[in-house]
Amino acid sequence: MDHSSFNPLPSPTWNWLRVNHTQLRVNGPFTGPSTPVLTEGVCTISDEPQSWHIPSSGGPDFDTFIRAAVPSADAFDVPRGGYLLLRDDLTAADRNIARRLVVHAQENSRLILISRQMTESAGTAAIAESVSIQAEAGSHITYVQIVDTGRENRVYTSLGIEAGAQAQIETTQIVLSAGSAAIGGLTDLLGEQSSLDCAIAYQCKADHVLDMNWIIPHHGKKTDSRIAVSGVLRDLARKTFRGTIDFRRGSAGATGSETEDVLLLSETVQNQTVPVILCEEEDVSGTHGASIGRLSEGTLYYMQSRGLSEAEIYRILAKARLAAGIRRIPDAATQAWLRRRLGDDPSDSSPA
Image (cartoon, rainbow, N blue to C red; front, side):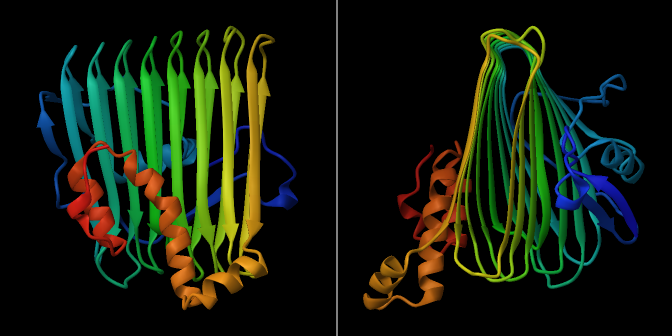
């Protein structure tokens, strides 16, 4: 079993807090998935650029692990001014699966990447994935990740994006069922006026464990980043969120914000929120905040008096938080699938 570091905090704090990183725990070998990456639009399927090394949220230990597990990557090149939709499904049943995905989005191109990590059985299979995106000047990137796994399953995903001048990055991560999931993203805002808009919505119950790590280095002038996290915890669930906005020297005029809204529905949950702002530049603006609380007795009594059970109350509150993330997805089929998974009628679904 591998116990390497995963999702490391860029600026480590006291070890006794146990928030500096999580552990990469995997048993047995990994093989490639049986399902290919499906494409819609125009692209070139090419060899992986050997010179690429885009830092990602999982950290160097995971980079070493995933390159050994998957020697070659699925690599795509989106032409200048082109459009590409990638559908990336990883479904684990009775074996560990891993994938490396590399995308080069040329100037003024449009990329939509929809990635789902799912399991089909109650086994102990693990999923590991590394995604690297090079977003050239003026490109528009939409990354959607959906995690829906069983109690005994492990998911490790590491995202790395380099954004050129005026590149727009939009990311949405939705966790329906975590099992033991570690996700995140590192978006390096290199070019002037590049931006990141990140939204995360999750529900975590039973004894599931969710670990999240987002890192945004600002290099370019007048860059902007926004992270909004919203979720519900109940039962024995454990959740850690690390959010780091890093204003590097030369990023004058940059702005960044991160917020988290956590609803605790049990006395036995464990919640850890680690908002961090690092700064080497004077003319910047960074904010962070967290709202963490429980339902009031009055609200709970009111909802129960209307005939709702505790399970139904949890489902309603969790769906409300997930709904905002679903509306961000620019793909009607994915929206409909999510609504079916949540028990809603998909007939009213429409593209975001």
